[in-house]
Amino acid sequence: ARSLPSSPERRQKAGGAPGAACRPGCSRQLRVRFADALGLELAQVKVFNAGDDPSVPLHVLSRLAINSDLCCSSQDLEFTLQCLVPDFLPPIEATDFSERLGRQLVCLERVTCSDLGISGTVRVRNVAFEKQVAVRYTFSDWKSAHEAVARWRGPAGSEGTEDVFAFGFPVPPFLLALGSRVHFALRYRVAGAEYWDNNHGRDYSLTCRNHALH
Image 1: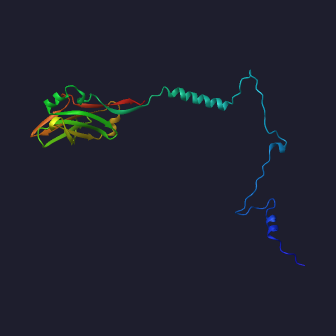
Image 2: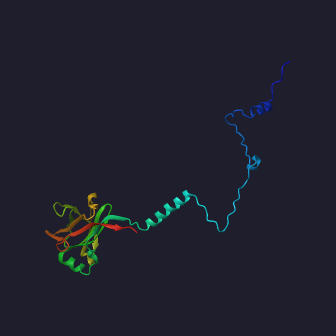
């Protein structure tokens, strides 16, 4: 006689027998056994006496020593940045700035240095409407020179008797070496005449120096 087909329930139990391969989509149950079930201790207790010296592993001691050296040495480290620093104070902060401007008709106000180069502002006497301001600069102590035209920024002074111009020029990477210098002077052309501001014949200069970072 034929046997009846096994029920789905019986086939499922047969497929879940120990050692059977788990098909995709099925989940295998994990067994957890504690140490006491295997005859082992659940915890280890160690008693320390107050007079005993602690036993620290060597790898922990070596790591503590390295961290201590880094901590101590970092206090002695000084981080510096090489940058161009003006060799002069901002002329606009001088007490005789107005007198100087009236005498030479053009005068540097201040300069700033950044990653983009050197920039600054110039003040001139408003002699005529048509005027031109430029900065002449050199990286080779005037063995060669370059010029950059300044842009009109706006009026200044009382009753529009003065104008402010802004200038800027890039700085080549080799000037970031310590001791490198850049010189510049300002030229003002107006009403068919030419006027200069060259820092009383000494030129304006900036020197590459170390600047401490705090």
